Image (cartoon, rainbow, N blue to C red; front, top):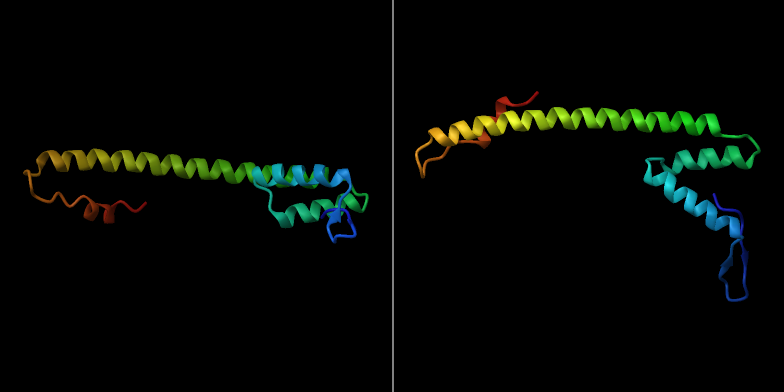
Length: 112
């Protein structure tokens, strides 16, 4: 993905200044959910002279959709846990001190 580097006499690679910019771009793209395979495809398109803008936009829309789906899933899980904890509070209030309330056992019916 990085432009070819020359080698110094000591064997270290010497990259062009644009390489640092590309690394920063890659790090930011990974931070928002792009995979290395997706980025490789985008950079191949770009390096071949084909603007990958529509592809990048489509990939980003997929990332946003996945995030929204995960948020909805987590909100449903949160509501379920709130309901479960209310039930547990009732069970605990009705259970004599020192006796088991079987809270975890009550979860087997909580699968949704």
